[in-house]
Structure formats: C-alpha cells, structure tokens
Image 1 (cartoon, helix red, strand yellow):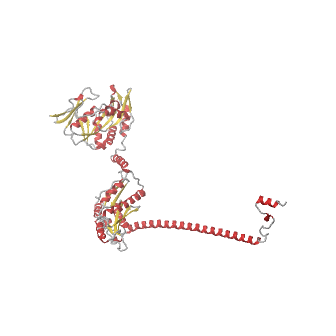
Image 2 (cartoon, rainbow, N blue to C red):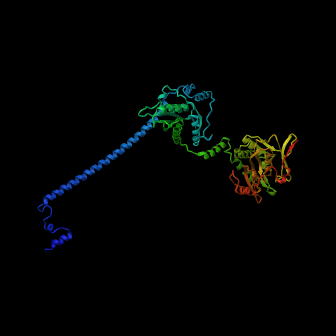
Image 3 (cartoon, rainbow, N blue to C red):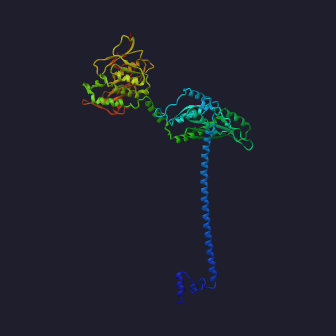
Length: 559
C-alpha cells in the first residue's frame, strides 16, 4: 500500500527514505564516510574517558601519598619532641653535680641545701611526715622555687593531698663550670635533681630566662637567668628600653621540672611584652603558666585526683582520728554499752534505770574506757582545756575522757571541804534525789581562760549538767560541750540545756516503754528528730541568775 511507509514512519519515528534504504549507514551514497566519522568520535570519547579516569586515579594517589606524608611528619615530630624531652632529662641527669650534693660540701648548691645536708649527716634534719594512712598526705615533695611561688603552689598541690615539705629558694648558682651553656629546661632539671638526691623526695624546681628579642637593627640582648633574685630583670629592661625601637619585645620564658626516681617531667610558660611596658612582675605570668602545665602532668602521671577544700577538710578530720587512735574505737563504747543495757539494766519506779552492775556501783572498766574514748573523739574538735564532772557517778567516764584528751579532770564536790578556802557553790535538785543538793568547786580549778567539757553518766532532766554549767559561768569559764553515757529520750534533758547552745553527745539513747528498755538506733553525732523538735519547742534562754526553784543556788563563799 502506498501509505504504508508513511504509516510506519509515524509509528516508529523513521522517515520514508530510511525505510526505502536511502539513508541507512553504508547503503546510501554518504554511508561509509558517516560511519567512519561516528567511529572516530566514539573512539575519541572513549580515549577522553580513559584519560579522565587516569587523572582521577593520579589525583587520588597524590592525596593518599600526601596524607601518608603528613601522618609520617606528625609522627616524626612527636618522636622528635619525645626524644628532646628525654634528652633534656638525660642531660640534666648527666650534668655532674659537685660532690657537695652527696657529701655536704655543697659549694655549688644553695646555702639552705648545704645546711640541710649537714643536718642530715648529723641525723638532725626534719623528717617529712609519713604517707597515708599515717598522715593525710598521699605524696610529699621538696622544692627549689622562690618563696613567693612556693607559697602559691603549696596551696595548689594540697588539693591533690600533696605536701610541699621543704623549699630551697636560694639557688644563686648551679656550681657547674659550663652552667652558662645549659638551657632553661636543663637548669630546672638540674636543680630538681639536686634537691631530689639530697632529700630523697620527689622535687619540683623552676628556672626563668629573660631576654630582649632581636630586630632588623638590633641583635638580641644577653639572656638573663633568674634563679632567686629577680632584680636583674629590671636592670636588663632598663638597659634595653632607651635604645630599642617601638615594637621590640621582651621575652619571659619559664621552665619547670619534676624529678623523682621514676619520672622526669617539665612544664613550659612564655610571655612576650613590648619593651616600653615590660616589667619584672611580668615574669610571674610565664612562671604561673609553666607551673600549671607541670601540675597537670604530675597529677596525671601519679594518678592524683583534685579533691577541693571541703573534701580535704573532711579527710583531714578523719586523719586526726587516725593519729589519736580513736577512729577504730569510734563505736566500740556504743556497742558495749548497748549490749549491757539490754542484758542487765532494769527499770525501777518512776522509770528510773538501774545500771549499778556495770556503771555506777560495779564498773565494767573496759566498757567505761571505750565510752570515754568515744566521747573524747566526738568532742575533741571543741578544743577543750579541762573536764568537769560531779562526784561520784560522773567521775569514771570523765576520767577516761580526760585521759583520752590528755586534760585535767575536775569534779564538783557535794560537801564543802575545810581545806577549800574559796569556792564556787550552786544547788540543784536531781530526779533521783528527794532534796536539793549543793555542789562546790574551788576557785583555784576553774579559770576564765578554761574551755570546759561537762561529763556525766546520765542526761535525764538536765539539772545536774545545768548546775555544772552555772558553776563555770560564775568562774567566767567557757563551756564548749557536754558528754553523757546514757540519755533518756522521754526526760527532755537535751531541750532543757538547749539555751546554753553547746554541743551535747550521748553514747546511748534509751526509752522506757511498759517497763522495758529500748535503745534507740540513731546517728551517734546527731540528736534524733523528736528531740530536735523538742528543743525548738521548749528552748529557753538562760542568764547569769539561777532558775526560780534555785533562788539561793549560785553563791560564792569566802571562808
């Protein structure tokens, strides 16, 4: 059909001429040339693609090689830095010290280090404190730094529980013929090593160098090493300032060193300051930077953690207990007394406790001593100077408290002695006595300068302790605390005494219910919650006059 080629052309997008074979490659008059051109173009495109792939591969290889080279350079730089630090330490250890570092003839060392060596040879050198747990310190170091710097870094290292025990600040010379050739780092290491070898302690030292840098018109100044006297810095700056152009800088460099048997560490600090404004005080900035850097390295190398002031104070208080041997007995008295109370104590009329088999008639001496030591441990932070009690039941616990604190023990008598010519007197009415009782203390044994602990066997209504406090007030002595073996919760003696605002401690807090004794479990350092609320409700302020029921209670007798 004549329309068929057009129909196919419309269906498949080809021309009538192509269907007739006129335009197909190689069949028309221009077929061979067109095919050759297409093949050539395709070959060129493929060649260009191959070339681009080669260029991409070459670029990728170049990037890989550059990265490898950069990593190799970084590793080499780190190795070089490590080698330099090791070399510095080795140089410091290889520099021969004078024989004075070992024999005491230390012409090259500081005067104070010479004196220390001489004292050590005689066995008279001050020994450093023992390490934890014998003391609060985890490490003890010696130093060779200026005194002002020593005071500052001592506070910093104390937060690591490190004591800077001794400082040798007067290293005016290193005592080595080629010391002028030593770098700042070598000088710091050499001083630290000298102190370490002399004292046997790990040592910290510093060395500071100052110079005026070179410019296009002026060479660099001489390098001034500052050992102990910093006035040389001001002299250097004063010489350079008139002849220096604007912008010339003074360079302050400080190196710090830490030397022990196992470690050699250093810190670096630098400051640049225009010569027009520079002053010797600017050396402090470089010194602080160097010590801060060394502090971090030492703490990391020795695994020391920063504890802060609050934690250090708590730790120090614990160590005071360790040194006095009271920490391990902290709850021994409480445990023994509780056991005897539950096993042997009985309840009499009016809920009066009978403890005569182990407290106030026949005495368990081991228990009494443990209770006295425990009360002493709790109250020693009040810094008492004297213990006061009443005869006779309070005398035993008071004596053991006084023994533990190495203090004198005074007891108030219930009868005036002929031998006492001048005394303080007061009266009180005890819960176990039917009539008022008098108490006497000689004016010789209570003084205005005394810090008094009141000790007794019971705290019930608080009348006996109140009478003892009034005796102290008459003598103008300061009552700093009270301690008792047994406290009766129901009698509110703690609340009665609260107006005096003194700390009160009891070994055992007991409660009587239906004729049965119960020992209340509580934190031994805190009053129970119900007593605290009682204190708030019943607290009253005491003045110098006695309570209303003791109108004649406070009297001074002169015989």
